[in-house]
Length: 176
Length: 102
Image (cartoon, rainbow over all chains, first blue to last red; front, side, top):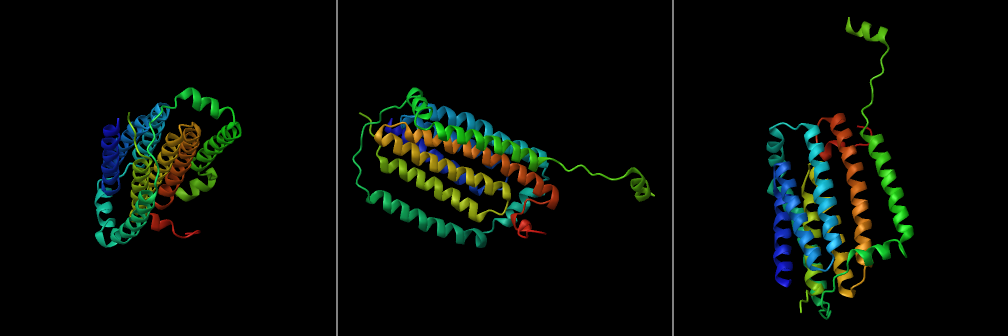
């Protein structure tokens, strides 16, 4: 189980590095699927099998597919990859990379300085999660429902194409 | 007896979060920025799962479900915004949308 955790973690890190360095958007999204699947394996080894299933269904299944649909709708041409190559020059990415690396080093220092005893992994199954979700966290579930509703309405409102309303006589005038 | 230390899980979450932050800062394409935000949210959820594992309580997983719902709502609204932006500006460059009334 431990070895599985470390291998899946390494796969997740490598796939995420590939995601943020690809020029082609579809390639990046396929690596993102690999990364989410690896994180799902990590969840499984951490004793959260239900969350592993949700990670695969919602992140790798729904969110990535949604992004791929939008990329297909945008119908990007061949030179999008070329433009991406121009945008991602070392002079541009070196600054943010160093800053994030410094933050990461601090985080690693904090986490390794902690002295936490290793405990055995006890799986927490879906039944316990459901009892907690619909018991003490009932308000949160309702708020989540409201937020999803707001998300649906907002996405519909923003994604709607505005109809061009022109008077037919004016249109005829413009055509002439 | 298998025992994955809490440090290892938190380190993985920290590395994934830093990679997402790096991608968010160094990309100009707005779709890649959205993807990086997804990576960061996922890393935050992983930290919650690790904490839930440490005390063998379901609360961490409940928080992960909340993060998941928020990510789903966020990505749908974000993609609708990207579609609108692309129709208005004919580019995915985030710098093209730097003005409020461009």
